[in-house]
Amino acid sequence: MPHHQPLTRRLTTAARWPVGVALTGWRYLWRLTPVNRWEWSDSRAGDEPPPLPAGTDLQRPADGAGPLVHRLYRLRIREPEMTPAQLMAAIAADIDQVAPSEFASFQKVRGDEGDLRVEDEYVVRMPGPWDGPVRVVAASADKFRLATLEGHLEAGQIEFRARTHEGLLEFTIESWARNGDRLSDLLYSHLRVSKEVQLHMWISVLERVARLSGGRRHGPLAVITRRDQESDDDDGALTGPRNRRARRGLAALEGRALNVDPDVVATRQTGWNVDELARELPGEPAGPPAPGGSWETARRLMIDYQVADPAMVRATYRSGTPLAGRDMLLQVRYLGLRFYVGVRIGEVYDETRTVAGREARVFGWSYSTLQGHFEAGRQHYEVWKWLGNGDVEFRLRAFSRPTSDGPRLRRIGFRLVGRRNQLNFYRRAAHQIAHLTEAQLELNLPRS
Image 1 (spheres, one colour):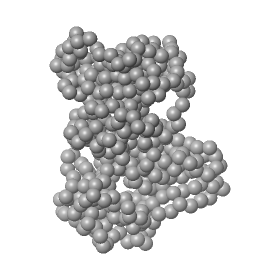
Image 2 (image 1 turned 90 degrees about the vertical axis):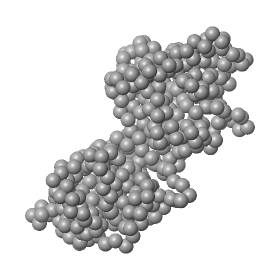
Image 3 (image 1 turned 30 degrees about the horizontal axis):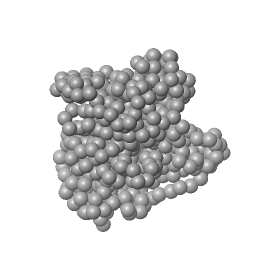
C-alpha cells in the first residue's frame, strides 16, 4: 500500500542537503578510487531498454529530452562473504544502506519495508527539487530493475544485478535513459553538472556495495557510456562538432584537391615518416566473424570514426554519405588550441587475405590529406580476424611529411612538435579502439 514517510524523517533528510552538497563536492574532488571511464557517441540502434507494460504511467525514453544514454557501472569484488543472491537480497531489503547518505536517500513510499517486489515505489531524495520517483518493474534473486515516474530528472530504467564471473563477485548497475526535460538536458549534456553528480553518486553506491559484501574491490571500477549520435533538423546527419566554423569548414572541403599523390610510393629513404602498429582486440571463436563480436564491433567503431581519441582529434562529417569518398573536417586539439584540417576517405575494403598460409578477414579504409593541411600523407585503419584461431587485432599504417601548404604559423608548429604528437595520436588511437571495443562488448552482453 502507498504510504508517506514521517514528517520528521523528511525534514531530517532535507536538513542534510546544505552540508551534504558541500561534503559531496569535497569527496568528488578528492576521490581516490580508480575508475576507468569510456564514453562515445554512436549512430547504432539497439540501446533501447527492456520493454515496459503498455498503458502504465511510467516514463519512457520517448518522454524525455536529449540523446538516449546507455550506461554501465561495474564493480568486481574478491573474497566476498556473500553470494550474488545474498548480496542482492541485502540490497533489496534496504536500498538506502548503499546510497551516499550525505547526498541521496532511497525512501520507500509503496510496499512493505524490508522487502522489494514488483510495483513497489521509492523516491530518491536529492538536493532541492530533485526528488526522483521510481517503481520496481522487475525483480528476481540476482537482479531488480526500476523505471522512472513523472517528475523524475530522467526518463528510463535502471537495473541492479550481481553474478559470479571469473571467480569474482561482479555487481553491475546498468541504465537506459534520456533527460526528463530540456532543463535537465542542459544541466546534464551541456553544462555537465548533473552528469558529474550522477557519476559520483553511483560510484559511491559501488563503494558501499563492496563494503556490504564483506569483500574487497578488485581492480578499477568501470564506467561505460554510449549515447545516441545527436543530429537536428538543420544539420541532418552531421556528426561531430557542429559549430559555425565546423559547418563552413566541412562545406569548403567539397571539390578540394588532395595534397598527396594518390600513386606515391612512400619510403623513409624518400623523406616520408612511415609508421605501423598493431593492437590485440578481444578474441572470438575460430571461423568467420561472430555476429556482434569483436571484429564486427571494431569495424562499426572504425566506420563511425571512433578511432581518434577525442581529446586530440574530433571529426565533423555527414554520416549519411557513403564511406568511400567521404570528406571529414578534423578538429586537431593541442594545448587549448583548435586547428581545422581536411581529409578524404579513399579506398574501403572488406576481403579475405592469406598471409604465410593463414587466412584473415580484413576490413579497412584509408584517408588522404587535402590542400590546406599542415601535413601530407595517408592513414589506413584495419581490423583483422585470423580465421584459424579467432585472434582479432587492430592495425594502423600511415605515411606523412610536413607540407609547405597552409598557414605558416601552423606549419612551423607542426615541424616543432607535430611528429611527437603524431606518434602519440597513433598510440592512443590503438588504445581507444581496443578499449571501446571491450566496452561495447560489455554493454551488449545478454543480461542474465
